[in-house]
Length: 311
Ligand code: RIB
Ligand code: CA
Image (cartoon, rainbow, N blue to C red; front, side, top):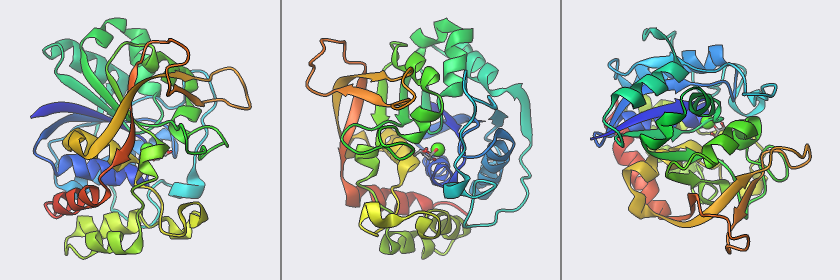
C-alpha cells in the first residue's frame, strides 16, 4: 500500500475523489487535510469529515489547514459548489471529529517521521497548505515521494479566468513554491480532466449501484443546475479531482509529457496561468509530468467498480 495525504477543498468533485481513494485498497490514506478554496475552511473541513463518514472509513483522520492563501484574499466558488460546498446532496452532520493539530503541521510531521520517500501528496485544491509546509520546513521536499495534483491548463482555456485554472489561480505563490520544490510532480490539468465528462449515462452508472455513496456521488457530480455545460457540448462537467486519484491508482490509463511548468504570479491579467514549455523552447528544466490523455472508458469503469465497494 502506498501512503497518501489528500489535501482538498471539498467541493463536489473533491468528494468523489476522496471516496475513490478511500474505496481503493492500494492506497493507505494516512490523513485528509482541508484547505480554504471552493468554500471557506470551516465548510471544507466539515465537508471532509462528512465525506469520511459516508465512506465508512472512520479510521481516517481529518485536519484543518490554512484558512486563506499565502498572500492573497481567498476567492471561493460557491456558484459551482453551493454555499456550503456540497450542493446536490444533503449529507448529515459529521460524526468524525476534527483533529486538533494544524493540517500543515500534520503534513510536516508525517513526512519527517515516515521513512524518506514513502509519502505521496494528492493535492486537489489550492496549494496553500503544501506551499506553507515547504516554507516552514523546507527539508520535507527531499523526503516526499511524489506529488499528484489537479490544476493548471495548457491548451484548454482557463475556468476561473481566460487563462488560469482555479486551484492555481487561488494561490499562485503556493503553486510557484511547489513547482520550484524539486519534488517529482504529476499534474492533471484541464486538458485531461476535460476528457472525462460526467454525462447523464455515466453518472447513472454510479446512481444505479444501489448504495448510498453511489447515489451521493451521482448527485454531487451533476453540475447541470449550477454550470453552463455549453463549453462541454452540453454533456456534463469534467471530473476534475477524481483524475488525480485515478492517476495514482492506474497511471497506465494516462499519457503525460515531462515539461517545464512555471506559474504567473505578477500580472493581474494572467495571475495563476501555468506557463507550459511544451516544446522545450526555453531550456528550463522539465519539472512536471503533464497529463494530456486518458483512457476514458477505463476511467469510468474504474470509478464505477470502486464506488460499488462503498456503503
Ligand atoms: O479547476 C477545478 C478545481 O477547482 C477542482 O479542484 C475543483 O474542486 C475546484 O477546486
Ligand atoms: Ca478541489
